[in-house]
Amino acid sequence: MSRAVLRVSLLLLAALGRAGAGSEQDQDQEHEHGGEDSPHPRQKGPGRSHWSYEDKDHWGMDYVNCDGTAQSPINIDTSKTIFSPQLRPIQLSGYSLPANEKLRLKNNGHTVFLDLPGSLAITGGYAQQYRAAQLHLHWGSQSGPGSEHTVNGHRFAAEIHVVHYNTKYASIQEAIKQPDGLAVLGAFLEVGPRENPYYQEILEHLYNIEREDEEVLVPGFNIAGLLPDNLKLYFHYNGSLTTPPCYQSVKWTVFNQTMMISNAQMSMLVTALKYDGSEPLQNNYRLAQDLHGRQVLASFQTTLPSTKPLPSDSDDSAAAGHSSFHPGDVLAVLFGVLFAATALAFLLYIYKHRSQNARLDSPTKSKVIYTAAATENTA
Ligand SMILES: *[C@@H]1O[C@H](CO)[C@@H](O)[C@H](O)[C@H]1NC(C)=O
Ligand SMILES: *[C@@H]1O[C@H](CO)[C@@H](O)[C@H](O)[C@H]1NC(C)=O
Ligand SMILES: [Zn+2]
Image (tube, rainbow, N blue to C red):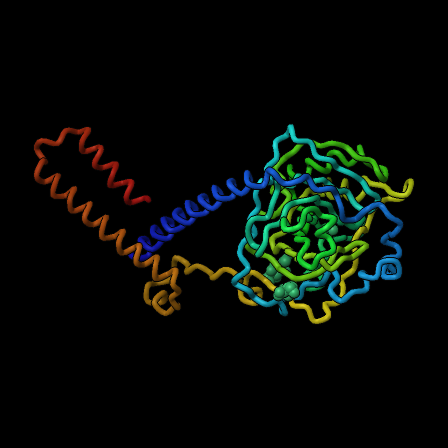
């Protein structure tokens, strides 16, 4: 009995939680409209210049910042990250674009990037507000992975970067050199069984921009679909652009949840583009840089299992009594007791009502009462 009540109350609490999340999204919509007066940012980032991934070990000769002590990417060692409960979930607003809003997709010889309108913004998770400018990808080849960040030494197949700049600066050109200028959201791409429809919105156009400097206009879509569903679990550190001029202006967020694209989609990504005439554009990733004492924060506990195993059905209540209680459990039990009391009062009422009116009850009425009782039992 008590376990069933606990389960019901947990379900109710979950439903209440979802209702709460919905109201947060409503607030997002307001922010979205507040950002419409913003100037349209120009694309920046891996610009058209003479550097290449072949000479990435020598970028510092032409671009001094590339030899700095807060460079990106890094290897994230989850045994050394610092759990920081104040790292709130990343909140995005304005990410769902209508198809009639056309976006520029370009092969710049280093990557494929998609210009983003400044109406897209990060409205939660950072201390300040950041406006989107562009997104781009890093990948490997048919024979190896190509993410920039690594986790415990593991390199993922590919990585997406969504670049934003601090709204306190007038443009991304101004923000790009400031220590608090940029916020980049990074997520890893892996090969899974299904085609990813959001990534397809980009990948299906790659054959139109095979050569360096080619560009195409693509219809808007829900850009948030390119990022994980779970925006609560992430790593955070201070770093840099991962391409020259390597400015140390990026507050990085690297998500713990990865994205899946199909094998065919990954093949398309790593083979479609060329640069410098007919060279395949592959392995456009920089190797992990020294931390130089920097801290990497985690929004979640990386060392403990993130989910506590639920008691199995064979557990008896005596065994359950030994498990430690958490504030959430106490709430659930309170809720369960309240629920049980209400249900009991209701049943008593029905019982009383029935015995009083037994002879007068019509078949339809008893049917109604039966339905109500059944609903209570299965809620
Ligand atoms: C990043 O740099 C800012 C400014 O120096 C500092 O306040 C903050 O603690 C740093 N964050 C991390 C994760 O080290
Ligand atoms: C996510 O976090 C878990 C727990 O620390 C870790 O084992 C895993 O490698 C992480 N994955 C990514 C992609 O960050
Ligand atoms: Zn990048």
